[in-house]
Length: 95
Image 1 (cartoon, rainbow, N blue to C red):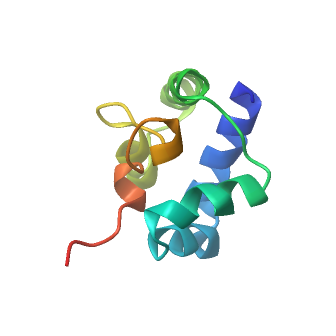
Image 2: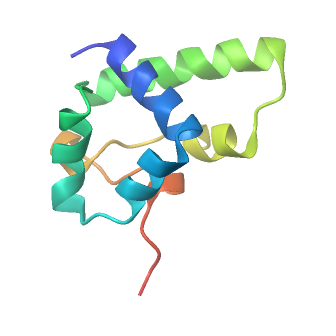
């Protein structure tokens, strides 16, 4: 588990539309398995530290993109295994 893994996951979710769509279209019970199979493993605290670092770095060099804002705005909770729901930009549409 590491901040580096959380940062790498964030970068992939914000840049890899296929991966993001796969997570959005998968039941919550299966998301954790997909994320772990992709090689990502981090705690909620590591996720918070990684997103804080991303926000700090991004605001100094450029404006945040819509995807950045959605992922960071108001904090972000990790997957059910880690104690919370998916980030807002990864949530499934309501039925």
